[in-house]
Image 1 (cartoon, rainbow, N blue to C red):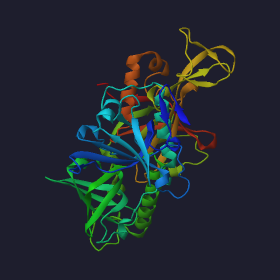
Image 2 (image 1 turned 90 degrees about the vertical axis):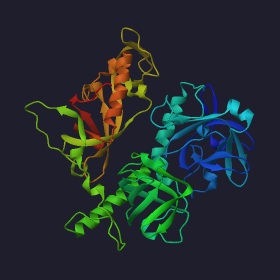
Image 3 (image 1 turned 180 degrees about the vertical axis):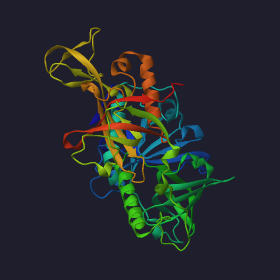
Image 4 (image 1 turned 180 degrees about the horizontal axis):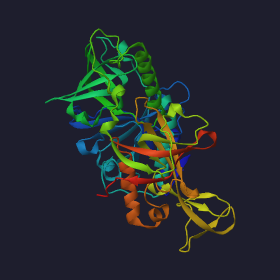
Length: 471
């Protein structure tokens, strides 16, 4: 089975030996690009990919993923991967199945150079994060493939098993090719290197590495790929090692944070002061910023406007009960869905109340469209239909899912731009993108009015004052 677009993109499980394929894949592991003189000077990068056709429900092994090997004499044609969960688009990869499942993209072959390329996507569907060349063809319908793969990764990320993963408490002097999942709790930039203080739910130590990894920030959860032990308190990277950020909205991230937060709370209950690292080592470790999330350094960029007669309590997620109908929350927004951007606006039939994506139907100038359910032309009500993944601005690190569905008039002011303007006015559509970027900035937070619906669904309601500049 292949994805349906005007181009043919093949799923991994349908590939045959020595075939040449176009495909999309989710990057769940990546080595740091290396330079080799053998058999001639070139750069090489190895990526591990999955898609929704592979079976990852049982013991995860070499048959459950594809290894993509990219070679080139030009460094610009090699991807530098920072983020687990990125989506890659490859044109003209050669599939070779020996003991493992390999796909090669060899830019040192003149024939390959002419027709092959790769592009990597993260947040913006139409503007890739990086690419091997800019003159490429792209089908508008492919955006749905990328969006689907993003969503697919969120739910299956906890099933992806990584080899040789250790807890920090289990590290030893002999280890030379270890993997670990850790949180960055401190970052020090020296003249020739970076020093990260790291911890998991068992122990803490330091990681010394290159300045290239300066994109890693405090409170990031990362996978350290292929490190060795310098001494008991210091880890260093191998030449082919990598540090890969874990998306905050993935199940992999949530499981790690739940374990870490639980352990820290256990220790805090045994001590009067906020604890040091979770550590059984004799040496003292730096204080973890996880327990010192100073929200006074964050910038309030969106605040609910309340009438004089309105008075609501500010709640934490763990304090919410079924009796709470409306309450206030202070949150960092991690991600806004769905993607791509144009899918944020839906059209509601004022007859049967069925909601349609604006990509599925067209409104005429008078605001009418043909409703498939009513089998007649009906008035279309434009509304936002949005999911927000948020993190509470306190030490709990709880991930909260909020919904914004503005067809009933509630929550219409949260983005500050009416959905009808975002749909019809290209300038307002561009402003909406700037607002999303500002809302998802880790240094910003929002004050929102939340309403609880049946089934525990939490929705943003009310009107808001914004502090986002359009420049």
